[in-house]
Length: 320
Image (cartoon, rainbow, N blue to C red; front, side):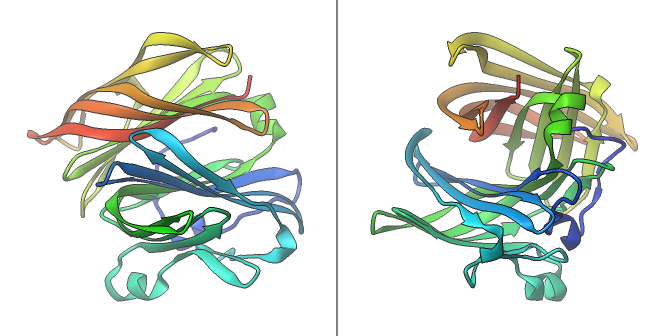
């Protein structure tokens, strides 16, 4: 994930389909949510495309108390899908499965997504309503858009015929133009996660580079307000308590600290994340771990201190 410059305000086109003309490229839309009834969920749509050819793969993963309970996925040909290049919209065989509510965006500037997906043994009917401003890191190659750094999520999930009403806090991002050149020329994996409080949300990442160095990124949002881009030299990420998982040395404790002043506003973060559930899965052949972490600590912006005391979702991906 090569990221240059600073995040900028997102537009609907940023979260639309980008596709690829020169190389076979992966692109994905990621949604997750932690619900109030001990359930949590990941809903994703991946595409692998070259020009007008390719595959579309929707996926639902449902967890309870951090442990995987249901995995459901399916693969479609690109010709079975409609993917808008102007606005977030995906339909499969004539049925919309993910779209931005353009009426609510136009009427009150609210970013509201509908995620209505039916797969074998599992389905979702969820509404994600953003609480803060989205942003995007754009590069000439791969890019990363965080449309919903934090969202209120309501709706229902259906597991083997049982309908479960759900409500909680969620997140949505979108990555595109990931090719074999991404791995060969730059990134060999990443750590990524997020932290929320009642009024703040923080998204962080550490990108592992092919020369054994790394780059770090963090963006902090205030509900209903602005976002702050944190320079790499103002943050520290510490990995501790390693275990062996699928022949890899994997941390189970992550400590995130930030100390900075932006436009005269002091920002301080001190958060510890401890694994309470780890779900291993391979992305094609690359090892991938999705963590549920018990997070504790504080985020302070302009001397307003808020406690972090919630379960969060983070991930680790290793291409080599």
